[in-house]
Structures are given as structure tokens and as C-alpha cells.
Length: 472
Image (cartoon, rainbow, N blue to C red; front, side, top):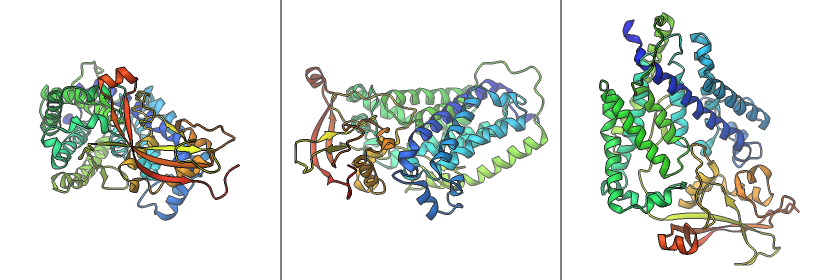
């Protein structure tokens, strides 16, 4: 079938595949380095407990059959190795079927991790990586030109990401309709970046213009993805620029980066395809069309959700995460709260003296410590601490386990932190948590104190807590 492939997207496919492999690499690296404290054998939410109560059909994963720390580590590091091979272009050195199998491997590996990751992996970009990674299996390699159907389905994902996010904003917080959400968002977002303080202090009229431009990009521009070139390229390029602006304004793991990656196949990038490219084999055409039909059928769930007045954000409609719904920041907090965790070596804890703070890698703590850039790497504990500050209900499953491991000076847990104030052989006798209100300092306060944050004590979050049998 002559219509089946489009050689003008040869370079776009190449860039897309290499960039997606980098995102896979970041995801697997985060899993390998953080899993022990989060979902390992002695983690806060062990995989073994989860698979004991959740059947395989609801959460397909290899860890239903084996879930030791050593096996999980091997699984995650294998994902890193395969991702590196794809970054290097090994798929193009294999026959078509071999390249497809190679792209299938990281999808299977990461699906197994996400499906047992529980609350630590409950973010929309996990499903987005899996949905995009599944389509990448059928995008082909240098043996054939990119298939039109798969290119269309990648645009369909990007449409749902942007349009779904736009709808959730218009239906959600009134500040989006009033163009005032960015008066608060840069200060109250989950993990500010090094430029977020400056973004917050931009003039309010500029913030209004930002919100209006966001509405255009998310509610109007996505429809242009399905128009002829060069309009589709212009639409995708505008989305990329918008996402790069978000990259500068905060740390959102790989959400912005994979959205940029998804926009690449819509670009008509200059490049040179081979002079003679053989047609796609019949078995490949049949497989691609069958998968496309399945995904179009499964899309009824996300479409119904987008059209619903009770639209939900970041929901998977099947255990394989083949077709999902997306959205972010349907509501925006006006005030930033932070849970500050402290420990003391005193045998009888005092109210205001003798307490030392634990410092997290990404979330605000030390008032003088300027936020760092971590995205696309995902600091899962720091993100969940933001949710914990919004409501203790978000922390119920894991916060007690976190405190217990701090009382033990658990090595794997402390590796998730920037600084532990206690030596390895002398864990704290008590740990407590306090809730503070944080706000950005003004320009004058920054010049005077050197601090980018100011905080006010709100209330006790967790009273002084010790182990029944202290590790002494």
C-alpha cells in the first residue's frame, strides 16, 4: 500500500526514537536508584504486600512471580541498558522484526514497575511514557519509512495531553478562567526550579498573558495537528515552545520533556531518506493496522472522559496503559504548605530546642537554599511530601513507614534525602513533623537576608514519635 508510509517524516522518526529512549533511560535510572526505600523488601510500601492482595489481571507485572530487591534491581538496570542501546540506534542495526522486539522490551520492563509502584508511580507521566512507548514498537526502523497510521496515533496522544489539560483547567479552578492562576502557581507548584522565584515576580499583566496563551495552546492549537503541512508543523512547534517555557519555570519530572518528544513526529524536519526504501511487508502492515484499530476502539474511554463535566485527570482505562486520559493543575493552591521533618537525640524531647531538620533534595526546606533543577529526573519522595502537605490523607499509606525508617537511620531511605543531621551509628530518639506556610521573599527581602523563602509555623503535623524498641 503506497499510502501506508510517509518518507518525509524519516528524520522526525529518528529524533523521536532517540529522544524517547533518553526518557526511558531517565525513568529506569530513577527506578533503580529509589526503589529500595519506596517499594523494596524493607520499603515504605513493599511490592510483596501489594502483589499479595492485588491479582495479576488488575496489575500485570513480573513481580507477581518474584519480587526480591536483587531481582528488581536487575530488572531496572536491564531497562537502563536497553534504553542506552536504543539511544545508540541499535534498533536500526536489526531487521524490522528485531527492532520492534527491542522497542517492546523497555515497555514490558517499565509496565511491570509501574503496575506495582502504587502511589509512588501514580503520576500521569508514567502512563504517558507507557502509551507512547507502546506505539514506538510499531514505528519501524531504517528498513521502511514511518507508517502514517502510527504517526497519526502519536498526534492523537499529544492532542489528548494538551486538550485534556486545557479542559480540566477551564472546568476546574476559577482562576484559570479569570487568568489569575499564575499569580500563585509558581510559588505553590510541587517542586519549584531555579527560575521559579523570578517567574513568580513577573508583572501580573504578564501572568495574565501567560494564562491566555496557555488556553490558546491547549484548547485551539491541538486541532491544528491534524491539518496539512506546514500548519501541523507550526502547531507542534508552538507546543514545543510552550513546554520549554514550562521546563524553565519548574520541575515536572519528564512530563514536559515527553510532551516535547510527542510533538516531534508532527514536524516535517529536513533530512534525507534513503533513495530506495523497500515497501513495508504485509505482516507488518497487517499488525500495525490491527493495533491501530484496537487503540482507536479503546479511545472511547478518554473521549467520554474529556466530554464529561466530571472530567478526571491522569486515569488509565486498562491495566496495560494503552490509552489513557491526562491533565494537570485543574486546581491551583493559593498558599504553599511544607511538612518539615525533624529529629532529636534527647531522651526526653523538648518543645523548641534540640531538634534538627532533615533536608530533602528538591522540596523547599532551608530558607536560603535556592531550588535546584532536577527534571526530567523524578524525585518521588519529594513530590509525595508536597501532597502530604496538602492533606495528611495523601500520606497515610507511607508516612508512618518513612518516620520509622528515619528512626532507624535506614541507609536506603537516607539516600533519598539531601542531608541527615544524625551520624550513621547514632539515629535520633524521636522524630516529629511540623507544618509551615512558605512564601517567596520579595526582592527587598532577598537582598537583605539572602533567603528566597520565608516561613510561618502553622501547626504540629506529627507529634514526637519513637520506636517501641529504639535502635541503640
